[in-house]
Amino acid sequence: MPRLMDIGLERLSNLLQDMAKLSEECVNMAIDAYLKDRDAAKDLYEQSSKLLILNNEVNDLATELLIRYQPVASDLRYIRACLEASNGLSRFGRYAYDIAVVRSQIGELSHCDNSLIIKTSEHVKKMMHDSIKAFNERDIVLARKVRESDDLVDALYKQNIRRMLEGNMDIRCAIASTLIMRYLERIADHAVYISDLVKYIVTGEKEYI
Image (cartoon, rainbow, N blue to C red; front, side, top):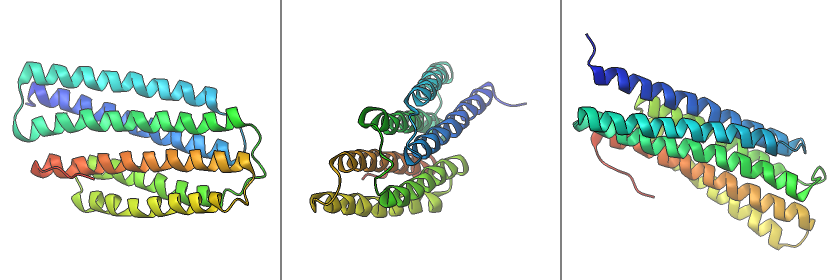
């Protein structure tokens, strides 16, 4: 017969999986809309708001489990990690919305060279997916790969800055690409934060950027 707390932990895991699926959908939608020069700010606002609601549910359930059962050791670490992961997943949605706002505020951008954004977004989306998978499967090796892969995002971000400073870009394209690359970099950072939680769950040790 399962412990009552196990039922709560399973519910917590299910909420995080719902958030993970929705957050990936948000980022995919935001990038796709930007590259197709389509305004998706309204849709992303609604999706991001759903993530915030789920985040609140995770916080409420985690707090209830902590107070009611006073867990220790691995159970306590898992609940604390879920709280942090939930916040990270909600940030994915927020940055996806921010990406959509760039298009809605700056306007038509179909003439811009998006090659760096395409390369960076594909890499960042893989980081997101792998961080979620590593968390769900307690895969320390995969979590470490997510952290290591963040170096490429930083390099691409700096490459975009250099390209902008050369002065050959249309001003609207320069502003848009700088903002998009910054949001992608922040998504990557939160993917690293989530993957770092795996080591904490398994060993009790924390990684720091």
